[in-house]
Image 1 (cartoon, rainbow over the protein chains, first blue to last red):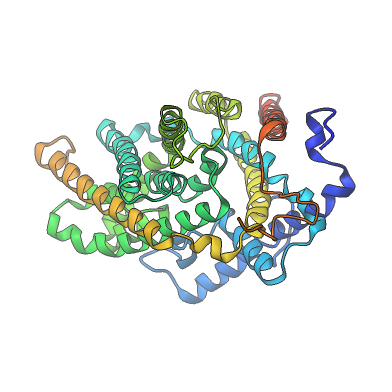
Image 2 (image 1 turned 90 degrees about the horizontal axis):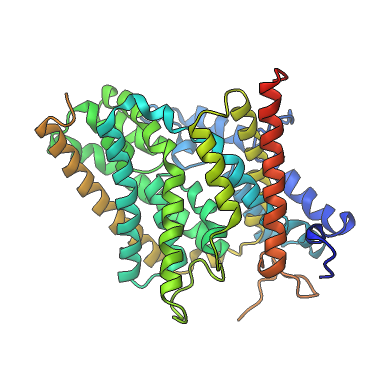
Length: 375
Length: 50
């Protein structure tokens, strides 16, 4: 590439336009994006199918399956790329995914206002924070024991600890994970969440955690928001309502989860220079500037500098950005890449997830019995 | 190593490859755009335009 300025990486409009249009059209036919009154979207199709299927423990099926503004365009890109291939003319434009990732992640910062969780009380917040760091640490160790590629292990750690498979996509540019590893690991996290949401209501009565804190257990041990609520409503209506209340605690601390995974893997890489088994964080030599900018904006968000509706408007831009980036990611992936190391990846997810579930149920029960979590 | 035909064109350009100077430039453009969008939207609210 002939570089004359930082903007040389954008290529000429003629070279980039076909790929950008491909991302744009996949995005607007996947999600209901602000400013586009297009009713023929995958999101609306899933909503219609949800109406046909009916609620499952007060949750919609496609929410349980993690359908959202990242996964819908990724799925559509995956289908198009694997059925029809990707024309060469699109490829310069599709490379914009690499500037859209830091762009979207930085703009995500105002979405996480820690103050929103303050009403939960000290102990529930402490349990949410501990659950996140313990899950990430247990997953990273499990992956090492089972000799899973450290990039894929990191993505599982991010998804499982934050309870949101989005985190895997956010970690992608930090960990330097391959697209197939990200989608494969995230699929394992979603699948484990489905297993956990079915198991937890069966285990709940045996453990004897009151409904209020069963809601907290569901939020910290299952998976994404809908899966956690499915598990809690499976126990009782009251547990489900409390899970809705406690879910904020899991949500607002998410950035700490993926930053933790990156920092651990980055330090590990620096300590193991020359080790051919250490791939995570790739050739990153210093703490990424864009991550510093994200942390700066997150700090401002925690100080409530971003108020509604501005924070909401910024999140709408994030949806546009991630929808287009996910379309490019989906187009890039042959199906065989996603399935690579699938069984080992799923084993790591299940082992770490089960250890997390046992530890947290024991911790919550102990807190209830000792009065640290008042009934 | 096999080439991923979905990401690589006939000139060997791989749109999923991101390293070196190009990566730094893309990151910098991302930072500039994100900061600009965030600041403009927030300023609009503080100025009563939102």
